[in-house]
Image (cartoon, rainbow, N blue to C red; front, side, top):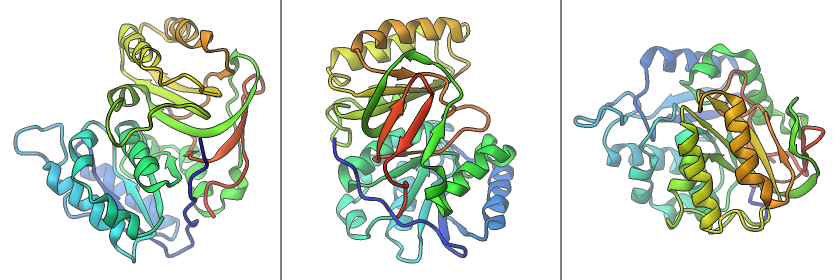
Length: 308
């Protein structure tokens, strides 16, 4: 797996577009997030359909065509330096095929941030644009507007990425060892759902795979992991970082046992409780960067800063 192109870091005054590719966005939280971004001396602009709600399916932020148009317009606007997702939920898989990837590639690299349902876009940006993206807090996310740690880690990644090339978990090793590879991953359910689509990688071979999820029963996590194993998607993976498993199963002990059962046989280092995903103070992880994982020490060391 090769490293991907790194976008340029942000500078004070940079224009950032906020889009909603997935679920509906609470206006109060959006405004709070915009205030945080303005406090960083950024110039946030809200895409036209961010506060929309689909007329039939209330779990979507507007129609598929409008959500796709917002993202593409923001990405192709030469005045925009970064595109931040407002929130996750569900909906990317319905709109990702409507994007004009040739036009987006021609627009050049820029910063892209999101997580959860946005996992499908992380994969698409890697496959279609060959671009490093940031798995991090979203502009209208509860954690972003209320948690200083999450804010500061994202801010450092955006403005001074050389200060966050070492990311520590504070957790333990499910399987000890060291491994090198290129970071990728996101929400487990979305990675499983993306299998076989034209916007997903054929495998995680050569990668340091970052996995997390939220609100899933243990048997469903089992199903996703087993599907990835059966499809051969995990063959050749170099190491695994496990993030948060909020509200999954009957508690972390049960989930941990499943993760050990399904991933322990791969023979690669597995680090747990790495502090990314659906958890308070979530750290920002770049996807598409070469790095070294020390599972026992709970440390991910990037070869280079996430952004140029």
